[in-house]
Length: 375
Image (tube, rainbow, N blue to C red; front, side, top):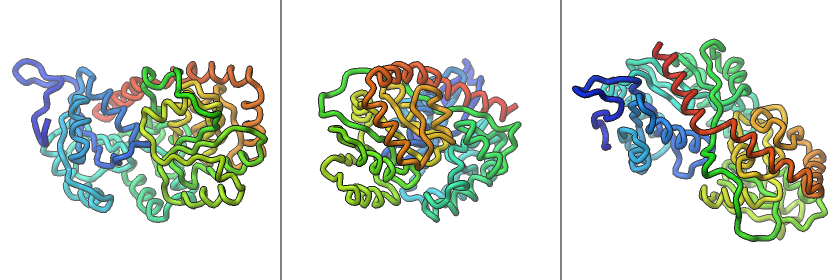
């Protein structure tokens, strides 16, 4: 439905409304969906189909069709750049909110504008802007640390995507633990599941944004120390700081054994996860680590790091190493690649663990937060 059209879900004959009228700001959604973008896409698809939820979405024109098909009432916002979106959020969102008159507003990406005319819920994804500022762009650190503190202060409920994120929201952004709900991300378990994959030479796989926080150079270093016929496939959107990965490839002399794919479609990502001999996510710290959950769901034997949310997500279904420990990462790779029975055990444990994180549960927890906010 087009901009500012009437709601059409959760209506009784005569126009009386039941349930909740929700306004969700999706204008931060990037054209290439990773991390928070995947969260927002899955969440709106689930919410748009729920009885008792009348979902309204603020979105860029390019995203209207997807949200409309998901069952949402879409209100367009002609913003093309981040500065435009920030300015629009400060000036126009409150006016739109008062016109739409929702029961609750959801800021799914840290921010909540003032003057909405209704209670607000905000999602806090990741404390590393506070705890690991050096692995982020300075401009993003400056903006998001302020925006997160302000959003937490203005919101009636805070959604944290992991226990690790909740601790960060409380310790660094000033969230009240009693009004902060842990609602983990989830996956569509019908799509993310073990299955066949196109035949190709054996490979080790990383999926994620190519940025300093993911510590891909340590993975390249560990890979270079292996005596293996495997290739290393790095699949993800090149982001700020990705030049360090190119330098590491050259320093370790593995250019002919490393494949850098760039951004890949969801279909291709699932195929790569299903076919990998081992999936590695060596992040220094992560608010959730959705690629870990996706890899587990697809049955890829997985290695990730301790100390933040990926450990929380993986449980005992992945092999865990300390972040930044190249020797431990190399040993973990050697163990998975050299011990077929251990790798098979990880293949079995992964989908079992992933069943604890369905996309439907993310929607359930989010709706519960909405209801607490409304009271």
